[in-house]
Image: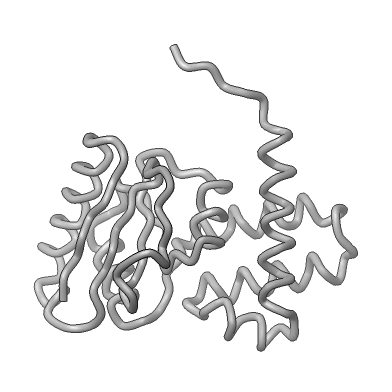
Length: 180
């Protein structure tokens, strides 16, 4: 089993590689078996998860976690979204879950996504917002998009489209930031 770290900025890529190394030290058995992992930093531009490494687990790591970034990572098919400064033992658990073919969403990220959906509930009928909250709750427990959607009784493509629309609305509402 291999763990490959791909990144945009060299500093962010180095932080992600260091976080993976710390996680491996806390769980020595990590990496002995299971599927390969691809760790992509959130600042990577144009990464297409379907372009290479079929069957690998995809993890997105960032030095600046945000709910919009987390939602985008999940929509692109990431199995986990993790901050680079996550406690090594928690990171090891997440990596281990992904090597076993499961997903992992940190509880804080799942709660932020649920809050985002609740705040945006007025954008869709209340029933749809409840379905999406339940879908996100199941995703945070390690269910795949398809399994969670089947359980909730929604079309996974419709749920993803709703979240994509929500992200577009959130992004358009964000004031532009200027770099110093």
